[in-house]
Structure formats: C-alpha cells, structure tokens
Length: 399
Image (cartoon, rainbow, N blue to C red; front, side, top):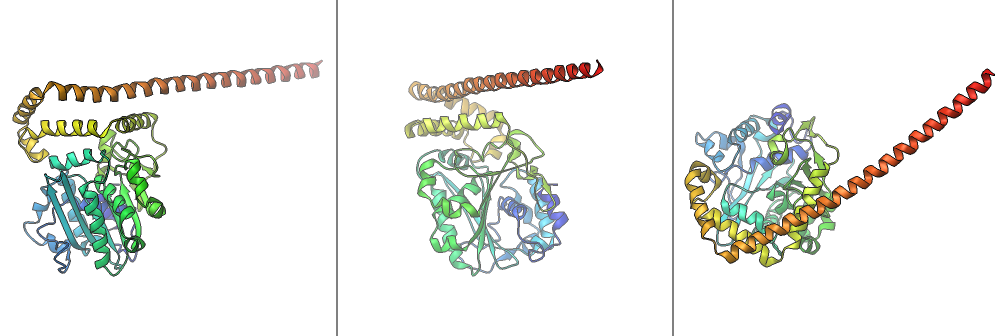
C-alpha cells in the first residue's frame, strides 16, 4: 500500500476519529508539490482559506499538476484526497512560491488547517527548475541559504496568525527547510510546534547544526529515510532517523509514492545495507574535505554547463534533449583550461577518498572474516572434542 492507497482506504476517518500521523504528513508534503498559486491566499493577504474540494470544482484544476514530475500519481492522489472525508475539507492558506535566480533560490510553502484546529506547515522540496537544483547543491556551502531564512520567517509569521499549535514538515529539501525553521524560529513559535516530520531531507553542515537549537526539537523530530536513501543522508551525522521500506530500488526510493505502508504507518526496515553506508560516508567526507572556493567552482561550473541549454527547467530540457545536449557540449568545450583542471582535481579527490575508504572497508571485512573463520574452527574443534569424549564414555559403558 502506498499513500494513494492509504487515502482511499482510510479517507473516511476524520482527524478527530484517527489522529494525525506520519503518513498524513507525507500525503500533505506530496500535495505541496502542486501549484496552488491560483487558488490559495498568500502570506500577506490574510484572506479566507480554501478547501481542496473548492479547488477541484474549478474545471481548470488540472493545471496545478504541470509543475512537477509524477503527474498521473499526483492526479490520483489529489482526486483521492478530494473525495475523502479526511482530506477533502482541509483548508489551505498562506501559500508562498518564490523563484529568484539572482538569489539562487526556489522556495514554496503552504499551511493546511486540520479538523482539530491545529495546522500543518508544509515546505516543498526541489521542483523541476534548474535554479532549484543549483540551490540544493548550494546546501553544501557554509552558512544558511536564502530559502533557509525564508523558511524561518514563514514559520514565525504563520505561528503568529494561527490560534492553535502546528506540525511542520517536508519531503526532500522541504524536510531540510522545515528542520532549519524549527531550529532557528522564535521561542514562542517553537513552543507551538507539536512534531517535525523530515521525509528523506538532507542534513546540515556541522556549523549550521551547532548554531541551531536542535536539542530543543530533537524529541519532536521524526526523520524517515528509505533503505537506500541518497538525499536523506547527505551531510547527515548527528540526527537520528528511522528506515522505511520502499517498493523501488536505489535513488527511486526517494519517490514518496514508493514508500510502503501497513495499517496507518510506514513499514519499518532493518538496518541499511553496507554499500549504502559506505557510499554515504565517502560522499560526505568528500564534501567536508573541499574548501568553500572549490565547492563554489564545482557548483557554478556545472550550473553554467546546464544553463547553456537555454531552458528554465528539466521539462523543457527533456522536450528538446538533442539541442540542449549540443549547447551543453559547446559550453563544456569552451570552459577554460584552469577551470576544467580545477574541476577534475576536485572530482579526483572524491574518487581517491572513495578508493581509500573501499580499501579500508575491504581490510576490515577480511579481518572480520578471518576472525569468524577462527571462531568457526574453534567451535568445530570443541564439537569434535565433545564428540570424542562422549564416544569414549559410551565405549567404556559397553565394556
């Protein structure tokens, strides 16, 4: 069962009949990828909220599906939510959607008003815009980004508007923004926070985590990642997480529609596999080993190549892939020798770290196997000795 099946199965239960849970959180986070700008009042307007049902009544509502992947899955989720008692009458308010290339920022958030008068502040993850993907890469740079500051401002303002308490969360980058806002918001705001749901969102550089009030939200935080998570373990070191099962593999486990659900919760998985742990450690060590100058050079150069395609988002790129590839190839070829050498040196550092960790892991594995073999030999010797003693005892009795 995935989130669409969940809404269809439990949609007739109100939040008063079945309390808000982790699956509800992911449902709302996924709906936040839809473009509600035409319907939901903004943060500054302070107008009456709208329901999902009222949006659905507009014949042009399918336009909200155009700005993100998984269009058909989003369509099924939205219609299932509208037709349900649990989500259909949810009220939406305080919608913000900002894309600023100069500030290298893509930020979106919306507030869902639940039936028990509490709210859920949902932060959108990365959309299809190229600037949104560059901003994700910028998370590896020191200091908070523009979206981090906006996430904190949004939480403080909404907390001041609402009468009740609130949950907060997001999927992917949205989970990171929700966590940053909760760590750095005003104390009055943090006191109203019921729980924080970080659904496979990346972590933080150590200095950002240290400067925030993580200890004050630690017990309220629920971080969930799939078994083969890639995004959710980036820059992660100190935050506890729980592993959930997915019906997909590799990077496709990041897709919220693939997370497995049983009853009204996610199916918990065992420990993450050794390869995933090794990959995460190698990548994070590589990021931490780079200077700010090297990070900027790598990110800006890669973005420069992508931007040469003259498209704004990945949908446009996919629609005219041959032309875009030609433009990007020219940009890569025209890159000056100094920049190209710097990028190759940075990438080579990453490969060397990965190779060194692989050698270390192999030695540890060999040592572990050697120890296990010796242990097996000792156990076998003990069993053989015990068999001999029992046989001798049996023969004595026969005499």
